[in-house]
Length: 78
Ligand SMILES: [Zn+2]
Image 1: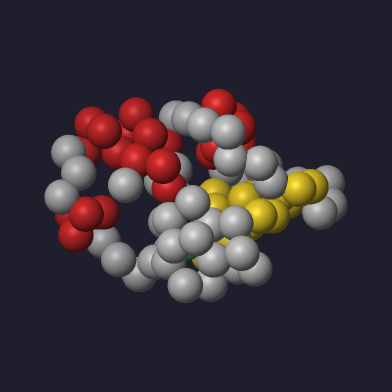
Image 2: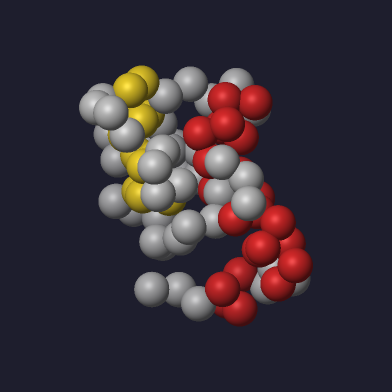
């Protein structure tokens, strides 16, 4: 797992980003995902562009991509 310090983002920005609901931020930026269950959304990865590897758990507010490093920070801050 990549440490937060490896991204060179100030700690206060990390805290601010974690307070944002990932699904809301992606929707605000026009990134459309499809619902695939009660708590999961899937669609193209906004970081690497992969079309079959990105998902958001809307209950735990975490995203995963099978190519990008694991993180609980909204991917749109990169
Ligand atoms: Zn990705």
